[in-house]
Amino acid sequence: MGLKVLDYIGPFVSVIPEVAKSERKIQFKEKVLWTAVTLFIFLVCCQIPLFGIMSSDSADPFYWTRVIMASNRGTLMELGISPIVTSSLIMQLLAGAKIIEVGDTPKDRALFNGAQKLFGMIITVGQSIVYVMTGMYGAPADLGAGICMLIILQLVIAGLIVLLLDELLQKGYGLGSGISLFIATNICETIVWKSFSPATINTGRGTEFEGAVIAFFHILATRPDKVRGLKEALNRQNLPNLMNLMATILVFGIVIYFQGFRVDLPIKSAKFRGQYSSYPIKLFYTSNIPIILQSALVSNLYVISQMLATRFSGNFIVGLLGQWGDYGGRGSYPIGGLCYYFSPPESMSHIIEDPIHAVCYILFMLGSCAFFSKTWIEVSGSSARDVAKQLKDQQMVMRGHRDTSMVKELNRYIPTAAAFGGLCIGALSVLADFLGAIGSGTGILLAVTIIYQYFEVFVKEQQEMGGMGTMLF
Image (tube, rainbow, N blue to C red):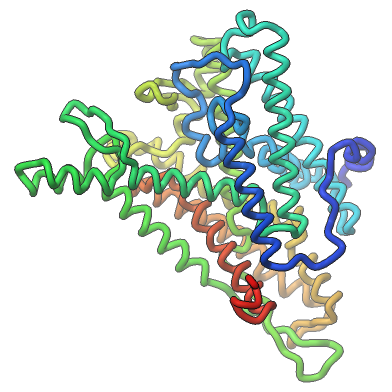
């Protein structure tokens, strides 16, 4: 039996501000409005610079994790969704290992969610202090105690805003969740910018446009040798090219195709004769949760490794965790240690040069996604036992099975779908990385699954409301 740790946390959970659940049904147009307001607040916070920081031209230590963690350097969204996702990751690992016990009742679920929020705020405070004290915004001695406290306060308040915006949507006032919305927005913004950016960069071969599509037309128009220009536009190095864009579109299509894979279990009403239906179990049973948690794990590993490398450069143990190099002044990237083997290979030529790196990355992605997917169903109320209870409460039974055998039958499908679906998510992410998709394989997977979730929500609302006109007007 696990410890009843949540009972001791209960009194502290009430300290965190909470969004009250609506007592009435929220109309679809209201949900769209609240979702738009939430996104607007997030985007504004992404542009408001932190007051009191010193400008720094140094490499960004968290360059590779910012897109997925929806963070923006030097702004109120410096931490992004990292504290929330990290708290969710740790709490689920604790629940999966039975270190803390999560009951089946709504009260226990609410207590678990409250504990996640509390832990998320504690992580926000901790990360804010670490960021300031390690000199990310200038040496603490130069900033002064007052400015340091002010920067920490700004980051903590911004973290609370993100937490409340996420809860606002999850309580039914908007569509989906704040975390999904912020991630999808950040990734889609990156893809659009790298495809159509009008910014110019001097590459040594002359001035080129950053955006892959604009660069394609510019290179064809300015190069006298059109065939050579076409090859350059398709495969140019160190900047987005058309092959990257085509790989991104291909991965989008593959993920949407796999979204349709499911098993429909026949169910019927135990109360009304002749009322039949089906319960769908999708291949991506846990959706994008495995890749979000895997991203949080890697992000925190990167953060810890880089901070230790900055303070204890040359230490053997720190070197085993990760060794870092500068990526053209924009950010740091792993060149050795555990972080290196957990990072995606840069190109196909790199895979050939260092196949051990590629194999380690594949095994890590597949194993971690399958593990997180299997763990998630136990703590999120979507395990075979929970589904059987939901069906029983709705007075539904599986055709050809008694109430007692329903859990056993669901156990044949749900754990397998969760583990195999997580494995497929990991495999698709690896494929996207190897093909060179824009925004990283993990980012593409997150964007596609989140957009598809919103599409499903839209279709469901449309069916319930009876048409597009009724929904919006």
